[in-house]
Image (cartoon, rainbow, N blue to C red; front, top):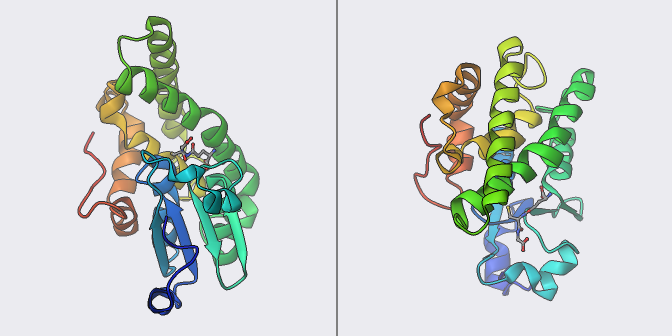
Length: 225
Ligand SMILES: N[C@@H](CCC(=O)N[C@@H](CS)C(=O)NCC(=O)O)C(=O)O
């Protein structure tokens, strides 16, 4: 991380960028870059190299005591926010976009479902199936089964609703999309889930999503179902 004590010349280069995003190229990082693109905010990205353990550096721990990305600093308001769901809510509130006051009960439910269930379970599936296959049959079977169930449940929801929380695209979709975009790792077959695929393709085609998705790797696109 190189951003907490910037040399003067660097500071002026991004001083006009109000939001600073500390992230890595992961689904949780992409949620925030996609949201920042969607609301059209100017932002600066500071990469935290998780493989090198930069999340445990004392400077970063001051921003997030839990040592996890993403974190944002809103330099204009002098606010530091960690936890991707809290960041999306904050950006939704200050921009007035994708977090409609009338729909908040529905949006909050689907956002919390992503934060407490969909993300953590698919994350465990990544650990057992993608990164460490062969090490624990119990872990592999358990999270494969739960991940398939999540695909099924999202497909059923999207059979009766255009987006997760209703008719509008919201921060609940923005939070969930980058996790489904790891479908190639999941080996579940996204294309077998018609409604989830329709939702995924529609979100993938948004310009802001394409831009936010490639925030750390030029031309990286959401993989096709
Ligand atoms: N609930 C947190 C989860 C954040 C999280 O797990 N971030 C991962 C990368 S996607 C991380 O920083 N891992 C580094 C570590 O745990 O050491 C959020 O949504 O912001």
